[in-house]
Amino acid sequence: MKKAVVKALELGMVIALSVGGFSLLGYYLDERFHTNPILTLIGVLVGVFNAFYYLYRWAKQ
Image 1 (tube, rainbow, N blue to C red):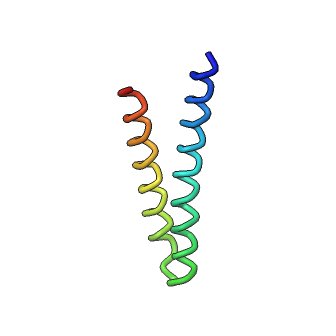
Image 2 (tube, rainbow, N blue to C red):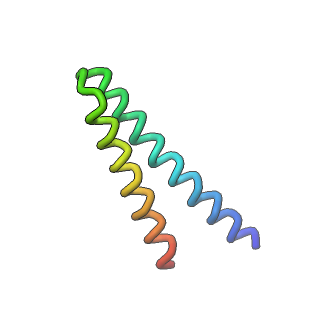
Image 3 (cartoon, rainbow, N blue to C red):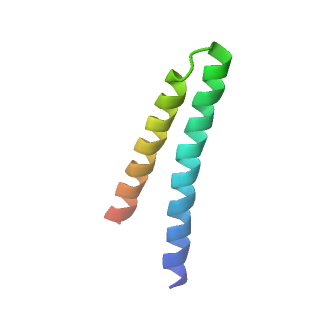
C-alpha cells in the first residue's frame, strides 16, 4: 500500500514539475528574447510530452 502511494506521489510530482518547469523556462526565454508567446508554448508542449512519456513508462512497469 505504501509503495503505491509513493509511486502516485512521484508521478504527480514529475507531471507537475515537468509541465511547470518547462513552461517557466519557456516564459523566461520569451522575456529574454522578446518572442512572446512562442517559447512559452513550446515549453508547455515539451513539458506535456515529457509528462506523458513518463506516464507511459510508469504504466509499462
